[in-house]
Image (cartoon, rainbow, N blue to C red; front, side, top):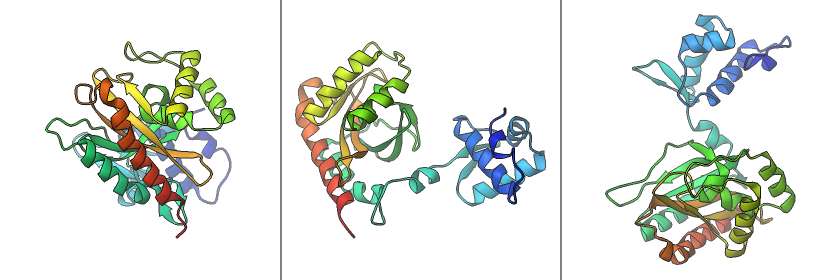
Amino acid sequence: MAIGDELLTTKSQAPNLQRGLAVLEYLSQQPEGATVTQLSEELQFPTASSFRIANVLVELGYLSKEPRTKKFFLTNRFLLLGQPQSQGRSLHECSIGPMRTIRDATSETTQLCCLIGTEMVMIEQLLSTQPFKYSVDIGARCPCYSNAPGKVIIAFQSETEQVALVDRIKFKKFTKTTISNKTEFHKELKQIRKQGYAVDRAEGLEGIHCIAAPIVDRHGHPVAALTIAGPASRIPEDEWAITAEIVKEGARLASEEFKQQS
């Protein structure tokens, strides 16, 4: 069954809506984008229909179009729509102030991340004030076990949630320091929970260190994480504990903002 077929197997009063959703689902699995021809061939839609639907989604802000390649890409609009809310206040609104404080105190790129399935997704970023800056695209995804924000969110989940999620992870080694099995990962999660922060020891990318702390709701459940990321030379191991206090305080302030009643 082709991607999106399940959306079109029953007669509907809104076929264009179904086709639009099928386009979005397909592009969510195509990080390098797709042309109208690719959309039409993969989804088995008429070319004219694919062209019309894709361009409407561009006008609405859900897709972007690269002029040179004519490829369509998902934007971060769905990430913003899907953010946890606290009495009408978005996670972004609650976190941006603490993020600025962390970035100014550490001079390193500061990011707001959420967990979707077994992947960490970056939904906001303030770039480093240093000449050389670590950065990734908004909406970028990576395996949850190979970075600090993913690890810290999992560490503060309930034991039941944690076990179920870890069981779904397909471990792969990216660098010599990547955790690559369940036993090691559970041991790491226990230590993270104890110290209140997580560290990425160049586990996803060579030469990049990260330190993250969780943002929690009023029930103590982790909804996101704040993290700094930068060259290992600027985030050395002998300064992790001190730097972590800055990140933890920022995450605590974001958590308090998120918990507040409007």
